[in-house]
Length: 165
Ligand SMILES: Nc1ncnc2c1ncn2[C@@H]1O[C@H](COP(=O)(O)OP(=O)(O)OP(=O)(O)O)[C@@H](O)[C@H]1O
Ligand SMILES: [Mg+2]
Image 1: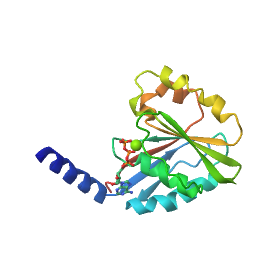
Image 2 (image 1 turned 180 degrees about the horizontal axis):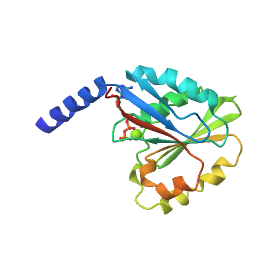
Image 3 (image 1 turned 30 degrees about the vertical axis):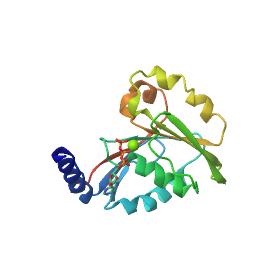
């Protein structure tokens, strides 16, 4: 009980600082954004969505509880998706249809690699094939767990940290 209370206090302190998102990309301009509160994700997501095209891969990196799933949810909202992504507990991958196309995008694929211990578990999903339909984008949490897969693909990384400045 004491441990739970302490970790909640720690989380609250961390959340007060807000977040910094650093974009590392060959397609996007490398830059960073400050998101002072959880509400700031929506405006951020709308900016990112304007630049997305079918076939794009966004890797969301950052420590436990930094806001990767929150970011996926904001991206989904910005794409007009009503059923919001959650942390897939049993499935590694889930996909969401857009009610109407946005820049040619009609489907969001959400992969959470948190539980992946062997990269082959990702390879068997054949995400290249999923992305070859010409209307899908992929958002992947925990790229740290699949470094070789990341190296083989053109990936834009959104790195989320606490905003310490
Ligand atoms: N911009 C922000 N400012 C302050 N707090 C934030 C911000 N964004 C997210 N948070 C907080 O961080 C938590 C992040 O939870 P979330 O599940 O999105 O993280 P995660 O990185 O997906 O975690 P996991 O590592 O378990 O996959 C939210 O519940 C919220 O409290
Ligand atoms: Mg998550």
